[in-house]
Image (cartoon, rainbow, N blue to C red):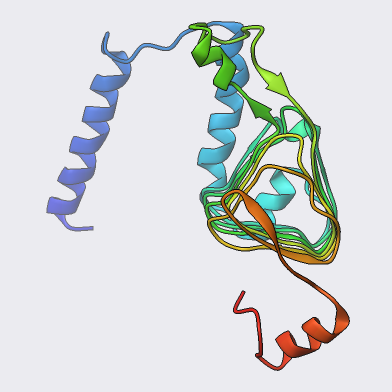
Length: 205
């Protein structure tokens, strides 16, 4: 190690030490901060993990993968099948209950919600634990490809494709391609459609 590199490291350590002991660096010792601190540290530590190691850290089943930047709120309320893939920066909110079937992908930057706090804002009560937060279980079936935003309380059946940038505000049955804002059924997903997709005709998803 060169003397110049050692000097830079020493300077960084000294800056960290000064910050740690300064009055500017303040931590609150409340039940809420204690609860969130563990989640924050888990996310920091998981940044050095591979996608399968990260999934195991969050106790997801065999074959699951979770990319960097993905976040699970209230993971204890998540029921997840095998071989689920969660993309970079996906947000999975399980605070109201969330179920994801096997062989489903949650794509990059997708948001899946099981609670809403919009009424808290309208009622001028935007603080933790207020009575206006509404929670509803969200369910996503097996063999799905999920993009966009999924609203709380929505149920999506098996073998569904939700196209990118879609906003899903209501339930959808199995075997369909869904898209738009608000999302609607674009087409049914039958065996003939799947065969066309296999040879590159039809859906570009």
